[in-house]
Image (cartoon, rainbow over the protein chains, first blue to last red):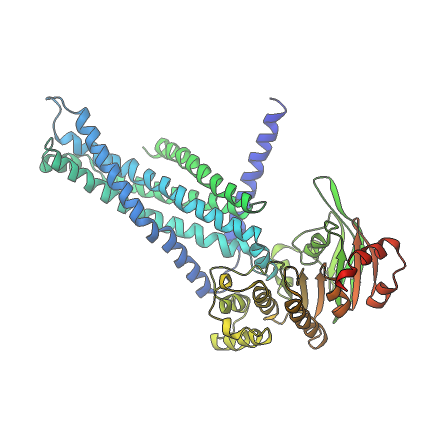
Amino acid sequence: MTGVLPDKVVTLFRHVGRFVALLGEAFGSPIYDGPTYRQNLAREMKQVGVESLPIVALAAAFTGGVTTEQTIYQMRYPLIPESTVGAIVVPSVILEFGALITAFILAGRVSARIAAELGSMRTNGQIDALNVMGISASGYLVWPRVLAGVLTFPLLYIVASVVGGAAGFGVAATSGAVTPAEFLSGARSFFTGFMAVYGLVKAVVFGFLITSIACYVGFYTEGGAQGVGQSATRAAVTTCMFVLVADYLLALLML
Amino acid sequence: MIEVENVHKGFGGTPVLEGVDFAIEQCNLFAIVGHSGSGKSVLLRHLVGLLQPDRGHVRVGDTNLATLSDDELEAVRTRFGMLFQGGALFDSMTVYDNVALPLRLHTDQSESDIEARVMEELGRVELRAAADQTPASLSGGQVKRVALARAIVRKPQYLFYDEPSSGLDPETSSVIDALIEQLSRTLCRMGVMVTHDMHSVLSIADQVGFLHEGQMRFVGTVEELRACNDPVLCDFLEANAYQL
């Protein structure tokens, strides 16, 4: 145990150091050509944001619907007002599920893709090719992806929250257990602007974590096809773990 | 001029290069040959600054690569062009964009000037018609030719070739050889080539270095290589005689 633990701690510090160094290098490197970088950023925003939109909306809709159903199920006591359903569902979606469900979907979809893409570029020599051309590979490859995550994740969060809330409303309205007016009344009475700000802050943090960790894992891929596969899996699992830790820390700090 | 002085490199305690020395003059094409696993590619990666030696120096002109910051190394590398073994073209870009990339990122040339330059180099490798294709739709030989066009599009002073003819049929290999020879002879580019292809070496190289067990066991001209006074080198040449 004593022999294993220090090695793991050393490895952890090495990863943290290399992660910080990679991001420092990426964001500190010069922008060689504005149009090329803008094009890269736009492509990444499309892949991270636009292409994730249907699956995020779908997941948010089901999450909103299920949350409503479960809340109705637990609130079937005569003394609890019907408006409680809206008061629980909408803040839950805005505070937690909107950002978290989106993060989990992107952790699987986006981080695995980024890690596999950069890992494949590493094993095929494309990252070395950029370096030999005198181009900072980290700057060229990492920062458009991280920036795309930070910029598009809040937009996906907004979509997820709106769709999740609307689905919750729809399920409540069709269930017969809560009237639409009661649901909206409850939602309005508990909603505050801070909830949206909190959700947006989480979205920015999650977007950064998902894309930057995926870039790190992919950028330092070793081995061939097997290494690329391992990187994709590692990126998805690691980002999920860090999202949960960040979720908890943000709740401690902000709520 | 490129000078390699007493370069040592090991990985995980296993030595790969153990005191490698040689120098290459401008306009010369230097071929590094040796058995698989002898450290040829590791040596080439030192020459372009992708690896730093544990001991020793690699000098490009008057510059010691080991002493440079990342920014300074990037600046030196703008004088480099490299043909990677698998081509290392970017899948998401067309052939044209692959070749144009170094110009777009490193020069202030207008798009029309870039287009003229890219088409000139694609013409040199006889692939103008493939400009709008993606690398995935090209053959192995075409990928290498596009990668060569990308390597030379900025008119680099130093050219590095990692197994330029590996995986190619003899006819396509000859085309690549002819292009490399043209760059060295007519455009006076210094070239360093890592290869297993002894036919290429004897056809186009000016100097040859034989890397064996981490050391440069022989450095000399092609004629001196043919004379072969070293039994280890002779065995290597004999084993590759089928290519000659």
